[in-house]
View 1: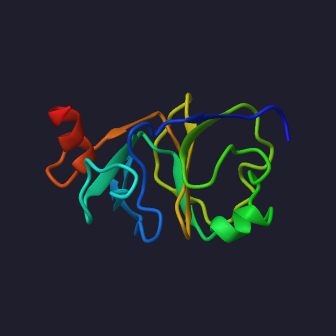
View 2: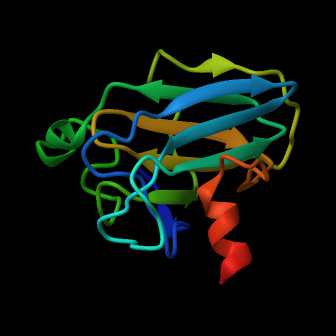
Length: 150
């Protein structure tokens, strides 16, 4: 594998470590990823607080079965490269194995400058190729409430 770099994107928040319940919804060419937030490490969140990330102009995504045990055993293609399990990253660099998983779902975005995003949950791995990501500004999104309060 070529030179890949992993930039951690989740500062001050993360998914619930035991049962984050990730869910994907499609809105046009955008993918919305919702999950429960970690109230144990980040006390500004309550149990059942939800985070929602929007990946704009998404070309493809996957919510795959690789879990924390598989990652520890080297069964994930990034096991020996990604700094830690359970984090949200942007991957940069040439990845000849990016298309190895067979469970990619096409969304229809046509971004020529797609970025590769990766989020390791407890029992699943989310990946997508999209133009950008943001916190989804909806009332259920505890990440937005946290930013407003400080």
